[in-house]
Length: 378
Image 1 (spheres, helix red, strand yellow):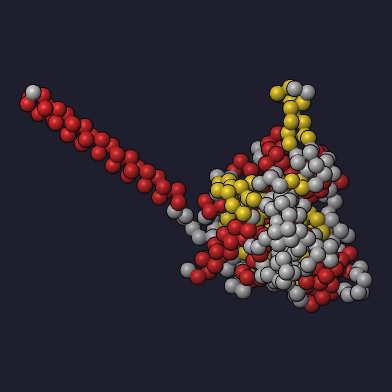
Image 2 (cartoon, one colour; image 1 turned 60 degrees about the vertical axis):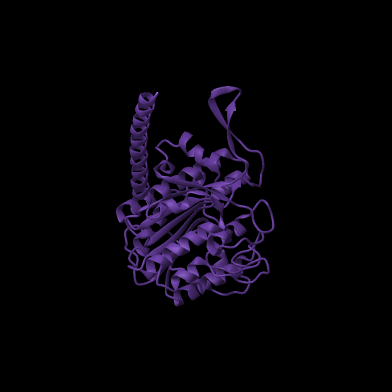
């Protein structure tokens, strides 16, 4: 019996030794792996923030099935989910959704840059301009439409377009491109905001983006290329969004302090409202191509964070099987309005890992602001 107990103790001690060694080895490997993932190589100097208005996960999926090229969405290593409800409604509109991104608050549907008491709240553009960051906005809608306007205006109703245009003149925006000429030079108050913008140091073009000439880097740049919203892709808008993005990046990146650029694919939303799949998908692919421009710039630069998301989903869009055939899909809509589903957030670049997980849309503002100020203070 004593011999048995002695042998048993020896076997037990040997087993404990090997288990201890294996456990320690696993912990060491785990720590090494975590350190490799979480340590950023560079700080964030620039942020390119792309908003696909009305773009839910099914819309993103359409870019894979209907695009002749590999979707640029597949280039993102980090994906999160954003909750989109506004302060007033379960289903947000674009104004409240964009204000969440621009100012970090939940507000009522229709509000731009104001809280639920209609009091002005600071935008990220106003805050980072104080530390020398250049700022720009691009949109395929009018530049005074809800999403771009949220980044420079404080207006209790999104439909106050002439008031919003006047606020662009006195804003901190350094570059803008989109439609909306009539709100600047065909106004009820007879003000010529084109002239006022030029007096504020802007070079304004109402014909086209520059083709063979270099922009004046000593001036701010403004491009108003349609009376209201820009034409649809199906109507021949062409490469406006990609070319405006390239131009903005060339101009804004000349600032050694960094830049913030918001780019909106506005008409994905309009195609959803119309329940027009061809319209929606053509706008989505144009937006996808623009994401490619942003990612190409960021990969070469090394200090640029690219974030892509949506303010909400529109149309209750899905890709359903066609007549029971699992090899055929057809676009289907469930509503002519917005839906309450969470929307995806894609991120690539320094600190991209900050954008994984599930969070409120206001968190995107908080994350972007902290990255700019962290870079500026160190």
